[in-house]
Length: 86
Image 1 (cartoon, rainbow, N blue to C red):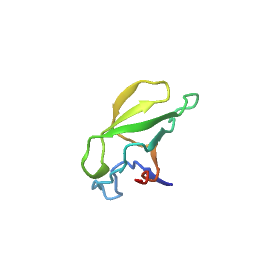
Image 2 (image 1 turned 90 degrees about the vertical axis):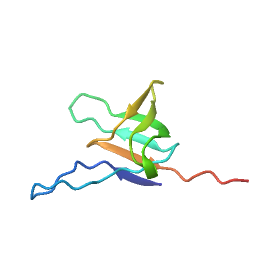
Image 3 (image 1 turned 45 degrees about the horizontal axis):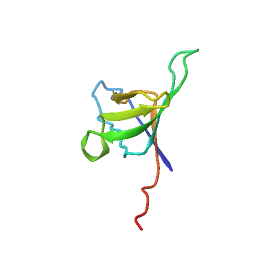
Image 4 (image 1 turned 90 degrees about the horizontal axis):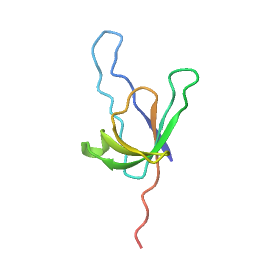
């Protein structure tokens, strides 16, 4: 199991650096709360719309609703091994 984090595009010299999260269908998504008192959100990636595992993702959240999600700071993907055929 491995983690991928969304990182804000920023460099000290002011130039943007492209950092892209990668995910597969079935991976878990956790979005850490950025404000005290808010709860973290957890869901499963059910569709990957970007190329090569890049966002956006269709996420089914634990409460059952689905949204198109573009990762930002505080988002982490937990990768799961692909099921073996056979």
